[in-house]
Image 1 (tube, rainbow, N blue to C red):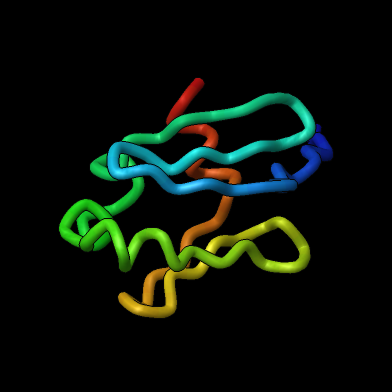
Image 2 (cartoon, rainbow, N blue to C red):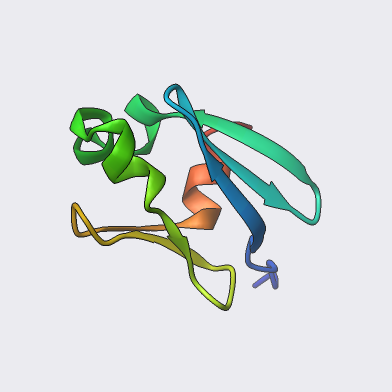
Length: 79
């Protein structure tokens, strides 16, 4: 039987030298850079700080390192 699962959407993101913080309707999640992606783990603090949340809240883009990640899978690493 199929189930309808609502997508996880971010309302805000913040970057720190240690992690990516994602705020959703259900809480705040802190994800260490190593758990986000290898590209982000190797990036400089400046490159990571240029993260852009998509208008829909579904994805995050880092233009300086050409990385795009969906919010849902990132938040799922915290559960």
